[in-house]
Amino acid sequence: MRLGLSSSHVLSFKQATKAPGRESAPAGGPGRPGRGNARGPGLPPAAAGAGGGAGPRPPLVLRGMAGGAARVLLAALLGALPAAAERELRFRPPAEAPVRLFTEPELARYDGQQEGQPIYLAVKGVVFDVTSGKEFYGKGAPYNALVGKDSTRGVAKMSLDPADLTHDITGLTEEELKSLDDIFNNVYKAKYPIVGYTSRRILNEDGSPNLDFKPEDQPHFNIKDEF
Image (cartoon, rainbow, N blue to C red; front, side, top):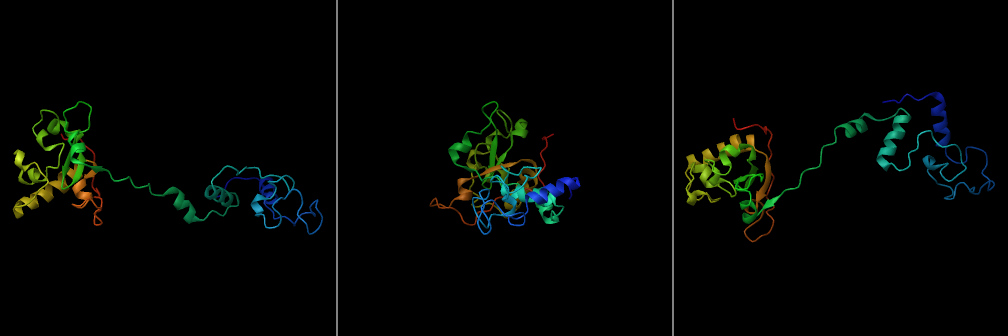
């Protein structure tokens, strides 16, 4: 990548970044640093002229820029920006979002009873925002009993029995476990964004961090209405 600089600009820039000692002798005499170079020998070439007498300043002032950005701009001005640097600037991945942990009391606040409040439902310890499906999960809706808690067992059994509205999957049949995985992957992970995890998913029973915990991915996630 090259910037459209005139030959005079390039000449001024090269003069401003020329190492000390290649021009006429400084005011302090041969072998001694001049007053315009308070740091003495070893001052980086790009900083020459910053003290007040080593030569003209470059036409574009780089002061106040982060070191990495300044180096990229210098390379661009000299027409030598590496392709790898361009790719890094264009395709730098976003920082990962922090993992949110929900305790049972906190999750219970998102039960769809308050207008304007998000509606959350946990399955297999993964908390989904099902607000877009409030026709099903909101106040008075047919599946409102599932929200505000981890309802893994109820989802597996397709049951709204209060005894089944729990995370516990003890005693489920192979068919029910298969149904649970299918609904988890093809309904909830496919339709609703993940907003966090229950404490049982992230922590061990003694409260220590679960070192085997890995956040769920949503490679096929697509935000859409229920209908």
